[in-house]
Length: 124
Ligand SMILES: [Cu+2]
Image (cartoon, rainbow, N blue to C red):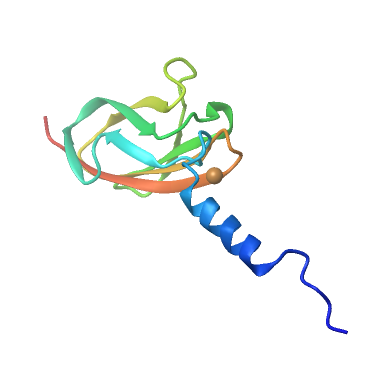
């Protein structure tokens, strides 16, 4: 006797189709929407405000921003706790060169995502 599937095939197909048609959950893992400086953008040397906006709320306590500069050292940037829950803000005093911000972000759905923002700092 062949074992019977727990669910008939048609039910599984319907469930899969329903899954595809279900709207995106309100709590999604974090995807970067925009940044200052912009990706591959240019800013003038000096005190630079940095902001990363995501598609969802971020756990700021458990997220990190690390800056790599022209001399290759990695500097953790303090994330400001104030402000909207979907935007990470910080600032840094930067000399001319090429920089990368590596972001590691925990969204409210419990998923970690990460990415890089590259930008160039020019003379004033
Ligand atoms: Cu997720």
